[in-house]
Image 1 (cartoon, rainbow, N blue to C red):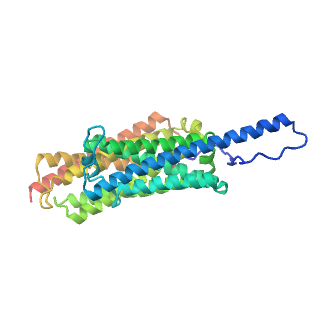
Image 2: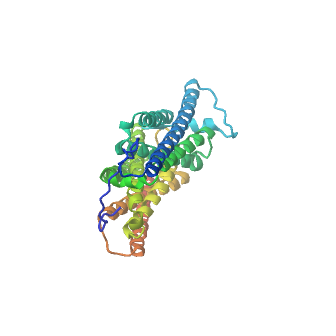
Length: 375
């Protein structure tokens, strides 16, 4: 992500014309026919890929609307693979920002279908901006579907065939969209690099800020071994902000990487930043979606019992918070500062600060536990 030493470039996205240019008098007839046929093939390829995307979007919309209808009517959802789909679609993770995931899915698939159809039928809409918008939306949907799949695998520990089908559809839409653009994909990302980088910074700011706020509130709320329903809602809201920020960092980080992959893979700051993002992704799934809900499940009348199970879970939560803060700080530093150090040296400092932060978190948890015994 670090911009120091970034090579200069001047790229311009040019859309292939729908109709071949007029044949100059000096151009051989055979050459003109070849170029005309080539333009037709390019157009046919664009149409075929667009139709595939539209078909996939309709399939995804059908899956989302089917699950939505089953939820509204409280009817059972038959799983083709014999798994427990109801446990997944009716779990605590069935909503995001207070809106059912099925609604988010229907909105995205409708946007993908309508956007691709409009671009196909109206040549004036075949601009770099519209192509960038569609490919970005498909990338966000794909990353979010990976997160939801991880929730099924590691948190709910149940599979929903329809949900997996939707995740596969999201991946295929992104894949076909990227293939459709072909060599124009990295050029398109380079053309809109300022937008990608600003969005990356926005995601970094809200996620890092959210992680700080979440940690402070989490420690504050648990200090008296009580957590009200209002405090629970606040923590959930902050968790959602962190997830959104992390998603923006991942999607736009990939967008920054692809056009200049050769430069980034030799950059120590970028490699460490990628490791920090991977750590944050794993930590987000484990803590924000597993440890924290498990901790709240131990509440009885809004009072946290001081038993061994709760103490162990709280220790994990404190350690996770420490890992989150250090990793977000490392990612921020790697984005803006050139350290002139080898990758191994940067990695050693990162691991050292992780260990120190985890130790301090456990000391804080131990002091809190001792204080609770003297109440």
